[in-house]
Image (cartoon, rainbow, N blue to C red):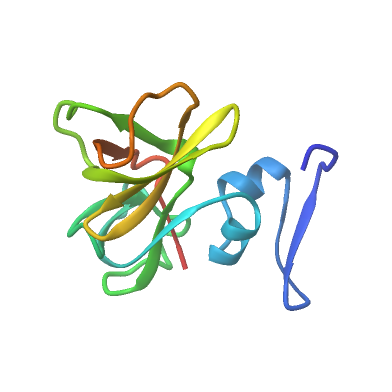
Length: 160
């Protein structure tokens, strides 16, 4: 992505998205593109409410009745539509104590910790679902400890 000013992503011989590296990474066209370019957490769900004036939706997932996420297309998003709520590991905020009431705040337990040099991955179990979180390499938390995860609604997106 460093040497490209435009990228074409293909799936089974078909072009599914063309754009700048930033566009492809920040606004992937679908789950395939998001997974192909970088790491992404995917939570299968169903749209339960659409906020047309804000390009936001509430999604019912396996671990939450109402997760607020951005939608890439308000016209293609209707209640009952099957989607993936998705967020990149670096966009999940981590707290050891619950912050003041916020949308998309979930409590989980560190199931696994992976050291990658300049950062760590925490694999956090939230109601039986694993969320990968990227944190600074010096965070002292250990496997088995509880954390609070904030999935920022502006960074959480639905994909079809």
